[in-house]
Image 1 (cartoon, protein in one colour):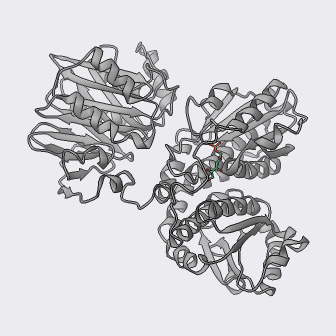
Image 2 (cartoon, helix red, strand yellow; image 1 turned 60 degrees about the vertical axis):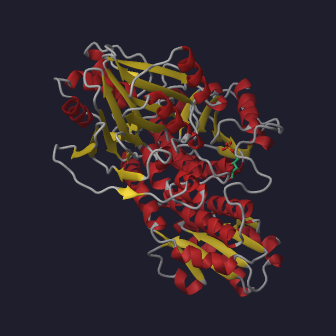
Image 3 (cartoon, helix red, strand yellow; image 1 turned 45 degrees about the horizontal axis):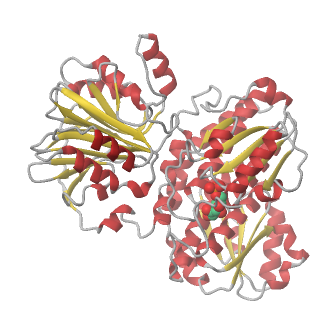
Amino acid sequence: MCGIMGYIGERAAIPVLLDGLSRLEYRGYDSAGVAVAHDGTVHVRKAAGKLSRLREILERDPVPGNVGIGHTRWATHGQPTDTNAHPHTDESGRFVVIHNGIIENFLPLREELASRGHRLSSDTDTELLAHLIEEEYRGDLVEATRRAVRRASGAYALVVLCAQEPHRIVAVRMISPLVVGFGQGEMLLASDIPALLPYTRDVLVVNDGELVVLTREGVQLESLEGGTVSRSRMHVTWTAEQAERGGFPHFMLKEIYEQPRALQETLMGRLDGDGPVVLEDVHLDAAFARALNKIWITGCGTAYHAGLVGRYLFERVLHLPTEADYAHELRYRDPLVRAGDLVVAISQSGETADTLAAARLCRSRGARVLAVTNVVGSTLSREADDVLYTRAGPEIAVASTKAYLTMLVGQVLLMLYLGSLRGNLRADRARQLVEELAVLPRKVQEILNHPAPVEALAREVADSEHVYFIGRGLDYAVAMEGSLKLKEISYVHSEAMPAGELKHGTLALVTPGTPVVVVLTQAHVYEKTVSGLQEVKARGARVVAVAYEDDPEIGKLADRVLRIPRTDDLLSPVLAAVPLQLLAYWVARERGHDIDQPRNLAKSVTVE
Ligand code: F6R
């Protein structure tokens, strides 16, 4: 997500802040800003765009001072503009904040503050925190911050500077990472270790629910309730490159392990108890939803595979004709798209040329376009009528993982949203799904906690020439994604197909020892898929099943089973995809490939 840097010491703060932020650039960002306490005022400089723009501003309009905070923003609320860039202040400019993460009760808090006369100048959730701290301030920044964060729920790391208390920086961690660095006569603070490495290797990782008071002399760690916390610092031996990957050997693995948090962020603030799903940038009304003729889903690669999941969900639950097609096919096939149709255009980057072209074509024919994207301010998000941001955070590995999982959950949210508008999703069924969605991040974590079976399997299949993936319904959609992941990073030829299709030709290629991955989570077609499994087994295939942990039969049928926690069958793709991502990763590693930058592929395909 966003990057944070803080400095208090003897040096001029600005060069240290800019240097720290530049070491976090690899994470991706869309705007940057700094604030420095000097002469009884906190001076803010910020700009949309790259750090170079901020540097130019600072050259023209420098700020002296030895205490400061800096931020690179990856937008979640509001477009990437100068105004929405951090730091944010209250009206008086005395309280200055930077923040990573999401404030869940953003909408009610915003209304509450506006009703009490606060003038809010940005679209961000962050700015609310500056106003809350101002309301709570009675001469002690620590107390004011403590009281303010009690009023905000969500996952965040918050850093505060106050004009009246320039000798300290106050910070709070609630899920989003925060690390303190110990220098000689200086102290630092950052969202990630790489920003600190040129200054110190002695760090203290702040835990959830802890408050940090940083002075030139040291750090005081407290709980949010007010008690003192003591923890010893640690010495980091990572290289700068290892630190960028958070200690993981590859960004892809890091991003796979980030999925529980990414999903939490996708869901955050959107499922408020019994109320309807809140999708802040989606403005469909009941009349449109009830009169809806058809849903078209489009995208490329992994985004298209996510769309295949959406197709099953919308058709089955909303009883709406739904079609999913590759954007590069849809745009050239003269589709019968018309007014009253909804086009769901899915793209992590929001910049894929074919997806943009397909969305434009459909829009020109009168359809309403809803973008599902990870990048706020991307071309797709700007051109669409409605936007559902997936909030996966920057994805750096070329092979998409966390973006895919959050696209799936984004579409489940859209299904719930449309279901309540159309009135054809029973309230008790919606509640079941909402409850299950809320525990999915934990279930993904459970899978990630036990990678050993996947690693062992990867060693067994790494030398295979071909791998096949089969499934039915939602399991087929997951098979498609599992197969793409494997081929794109391991260069093993793989193919996915509906389990019922094998016997119509491809079975000829299944010979003794050929790995066939069978995804088996859909109760209503379970027996039918097992028939497909038996067909390949009879040809000597090495059968790998992805199945629920409490499936009693599968152990007898498959050579290897990758188990996932039980969930609602409609949500199983979110879990079933995870062992397949890990399998692709470990096979590629066994084969010694460049996992984060596979050959012939680019992260964003902006050519047609
Ligand atoms: C696969 C992968 C690609 C992208 C595709 C679309 O891991 O990353 O298949 O999914 O190029 O990209 P976006 O989602 O940015 O439109």
